[in-house]
Length: 134
Image 1 (spheres, rainbow, N blue to C red):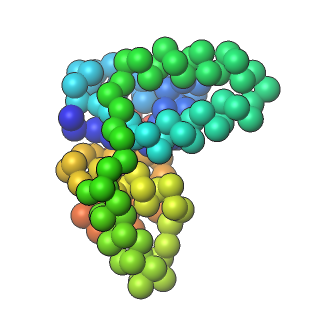
Image 2: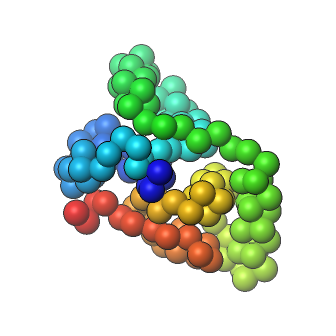
């Protein structure tokens, strides 16, 4: 694996709003791309609160069938603690879900693909790419 997709990138792909995201995703081999169980939880929540919940869950099912999923494990939890402590000590916290996702990318040495660069670049050692820019 090489890339971990953040929630906003998955939404970009599913909506087709940023064609460059779909282009990059199709260029990568299936073995290179994964997402987090935390991202899936955020996506499911978004589908549940949408007006077209059933349709959106169906689209998610198809999309997720093509992706490898990463469960959050004890190594991720340990890294999460370090990331949270570091960010809080610097007075630069980010969202709790973002810290969980960042921890998974760090543990596995993955590049996090996100449009939320401002927050994620605060995490020391985390590699970030933005596929919206092509």
